[in-house]
Length: 99
Image (cartoon, rainbow, N blue to C red; front, top):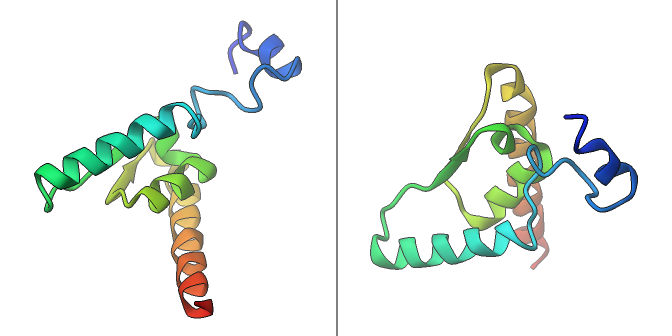
């Protein structure tokens, strides 16, 4: 985490590093709009994200819930992203069985 960001995290301005974890209430709402409008215009569109957010477990779960087709991240974050994606899929199946 960059030196300029640390005081913001320490003083609870940001719960997590916004360069690594998606702000689901702000940016996430914009993503929801983009997914809805993109899918309405082109139902077969494949949407995803890339960058540090693509390797963050919380962001991967959020993207799964949005219905994104993929996440892309740096190679060293791939195992974490794959695990988070698998856990999100399992949790989705469990929730569907409970209904």
